[in-house]
Length: 631
Image (cartoon, rainbow, N blue to C red; front, top):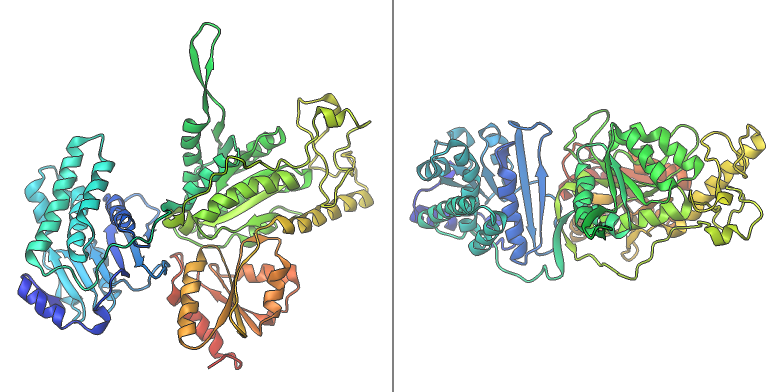
């Protein structure tokens, strides 16, 4: 039978009989909230995440939501770990079950010794019984019906009531939750009051009915000093402002939309200036432009045009947008025009699953466009790098006069991560690359766009309207080193070889890999982006089993020589990535000339954020067949 109780004595008896796996989990556990999409649960679940963060405990949240507006199951998973393991957990310790459609699967997922919190306004079927799970019933719907007359309000406030119940069960600081509600509804005293009532009724019911807290609980720490809670898309938007971007052109697409929306909101505050008019009045002038295009191809066209004119411009998109942008990415590459593209990756192909995560645009982005192209790619692994790499992308695009694609993903982009506070250096100067102004042009007889390459194979460019001597015709058609139209094989090859060499030279400006070396490890692990937390946790498990592995996270393309050296220094290297076709492994083989037998793929691409169990299970299966694996 599933342990169930309605008074404190039976609660205490059950706690005494808990298996060891459920005891003493202080600041090391996972909670899964199982809800119905469109019922307002996300705001309530985020209250829990933010309150834990304010308690000084490291935490992460994963919002697993469907792409429809209302009705389908949605989950919000919180990982609490003062040890620093913040990857998604495959098995929660506590499930808050608010969706009868998914009761069975949600209850099955609970770790032995865990707890189930459910709405006991209706009886729970005996089909869901588990003897090793604590069954905590709270009549949330009945309690809200008694307090709130409006039916819609009851649905929304039931969410806040279960937050109150969770607070009582795990010692989540009630005062912090109350403060968060006051902050959220500071402009609406009526809503502020009703939410406070809802929070209190859930909390008081648990406190009066059960022995609390559970063994799975929180304690205050001071581990988040100098930290912020932020999602990657917001971090990118801040990076764009810091980098001096003034133009964004975009088309709405999940999960990238908030990049441009946040950028516009920030610019309204930071790029709006007051100008005095001749009549003495003052006008607010926007020193930026945000354009919603008719499609992704048009958006990139606007970005290329703005960049050609001298602005720092970007677009945000996802995989389907990159597909549509291929032709203009080729134009930017061949005509050598800066552009920055943020690809927040989701599952494909076609429409795929818009609200699920993958890393399946790697090859598409590296060689985007027909013909021979190679693009500079950046791979942030967390919101801090989203901010830093946004800035880096604009500098790289200007310096090498080429499109730069930043490949984030839905997990980083839309979920809140604990991050170090961003550094805002007032002395930072943009790298605009080789731009000839009036003074430089006056010293040369004739400007020839592609003729004066430097040691990095970059040529000078000019900006329109500065000096007539700097005028040139920008071509996406065949051209020679002087910018003239040509169909000469020799002239065409000269330009294409220079572009290839320019791409190779950019490696010295690409962020170096993150590397962790153990003594005499025979196995290496390479990964990318948001895989890092799960991979590092899996490596910790391997080390406890006596198997040490070296680690490298790639942060940019073209690849550093150190990546090739890392692979050649190990007997086998596992490549962990979130796509079906081992795209990162393929790119490593193609670009570094690596023996394919040295690289083994660990793939997870179902759409949910990677867990350490995903890595462990697949890695063990692969290594089991390798006769040199340490035992």
